[in-house]
Length: 113
Image (tube, rainbow, N blue to C red; front, side, top):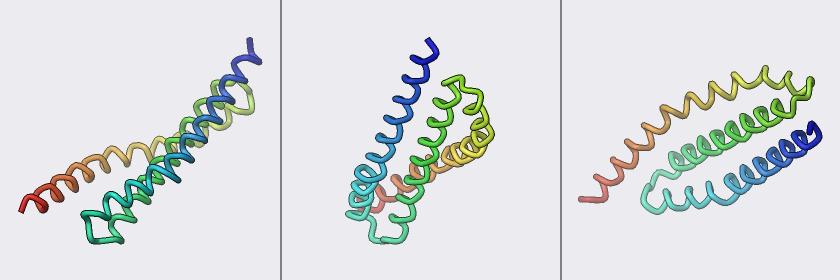
């Protein structure tokens, strides 16, 4: 049973890494191009998509730590030490959601004119 839990959690880690890679290399550049189509300030768009990259990396790191701890390996439990750092980054993105809502509202009002 323990070998099965370890194998499943290792597969989860691998798929989280693959999903994070796809998000950073495919989805975020598409979002960048989409935003650049109607926002002229290139630096702002690139900064915003950099924040999205950081969000994806933090989410991937958080999931890797979660799945590594779930393997019930005594050495993997030491990874719980870095989990509060990932939690802090994730808490910051609660505020980023509101910035995104305001940005969408500003762009919508700007394009209605």
